[in-house]
Image 1: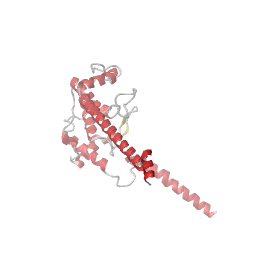
Image 2: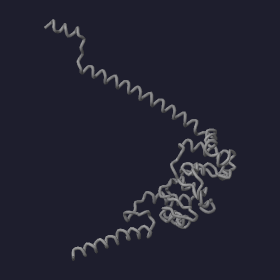
Image 3: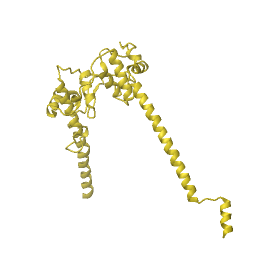
Image 4: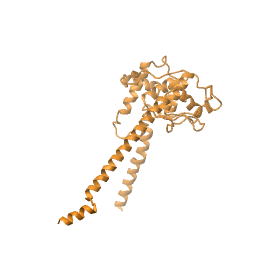
Length: 268
């Protein structure tokens, strides 16, 4: 027995469980170190980007690389794009954050498309334009809080906006290939920006047309409508008799025809 024990020690073999445990501990230590290092690098890069991207100087570089071709290096506009003098940071944030700008091709209207810049870059662009061509700026927080008079806001929306955007804010067609966009999912900030800056074919609603409280009530009504479920089931685009009539024609009359065919077949 003593000889067998001595031979086991001389071979230097370890238990398979001990080997597996050592491998597992090594993997845990390596993975944890790598994760910590990656998090530190990402945090440093994000902090550095935030600190530099929110400056007007960086916004100027972004503008020169992406916007100056159409709007001019001095923001005075060209044959391909309007002047930006007086538009302010609010209009820039609206156009870029909704993907309307940079424009891909000339057309009757700039469509919404995927946003091409980060939030920090958008703020930098807006800050640069505002520093050179000041104009409308961001509203007070209470304008966007959604706590205004909803019923009054809905009435104001029907009077001033529904003829283009539809009473359910589902949008609609205009003339010459233009359209009023669907605003059923639009943020309070962008609703306010559209009223103040008048993008595309929309008129500008200054404080003499709609007071800040009027705008707050309209925004509150639209935000309330976004959160409200359709009481009748499918809203069918909230287009009223157009979609409802089409639904009735296809499925209602189709069902009647199918029943008639079935009764005829049974009688024969």
